[in-house]
Length: 89
Image 1 (spheres, helix red, strand yellow):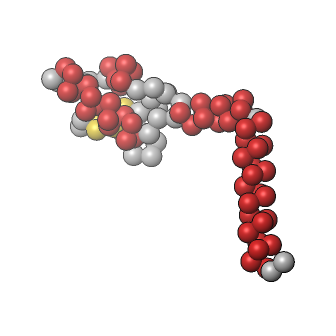
Image 2 (cartoon, helix red, strand yellow; image 1 turned 60 degrees about the vertical axis):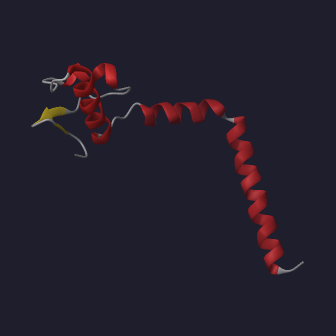
């Protein structure tokens, strides 16, 4: 067997093994996905601000007004001059 064939066989074996492990551990994958989904970003909050303005015709004055437009925790953010302010902004 040549070196390139051996490397290809190893890569395929490793990827199949990783996929199998992931398929056999769906609860861990779901928990990780939920953790990531629960974290809102500045872009998420800014998108919610635009959605609020489009639906109501006025600027939001409080972050609480944006809760129906966002899935996840936005409590660490605030609205400053019509834009999101908080972690990562």
